[in-house]
Length: 216
Image (cartoon, rainbow, N blue to C red; front, side, top):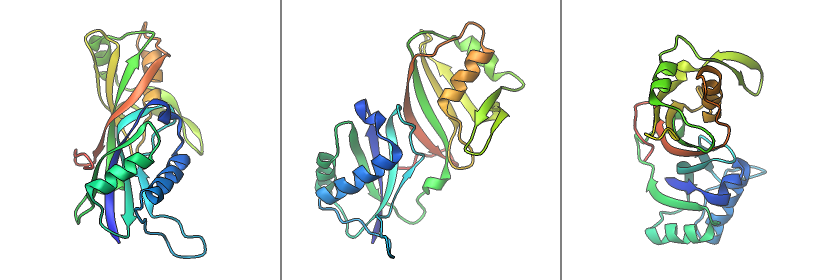
């Protein structure tokens, strides 16, 4: 058994593939590529795979991460065969053995998103004023409840392009803290006068661990 970490991109129509379908898709792709996944024991064995910080349906990304346990070591040719077995829009960019000391998927703390605004713009001055507020309270929904939450501590940075239409945001992510970029946009519509963008594309550009490093 050898533990590997894979970095892959998700773009185009693949952004509509759900998390559960993605797991099934990768499992079939490994099989087609002739790469043996390690399976759990018991009555209903399943492949030992895990995706870090599952991406919401409708978003694209260049930095998704998956851990998998394999029955043998793999080569660059194996990664090429795996890519050939994946549908258009899913592409593995890197694969490496998980050595002792490698950060765990559970150590994810931040995520950076690029948001392209199609029906509005915002200035850096407006964003700086937004970040300087005492609080940013919005209605946040979880699986168990809906509550008013101050999300300002969970926004690390908001930077916009010179024309005001490409917003880069770094926000809390992971199991303990997780702020969706859509929630930040909702807060901006609430607290920034004149900002009303509702038509946008969201792309995940980075996933960062608790010590500021990437996962690979």
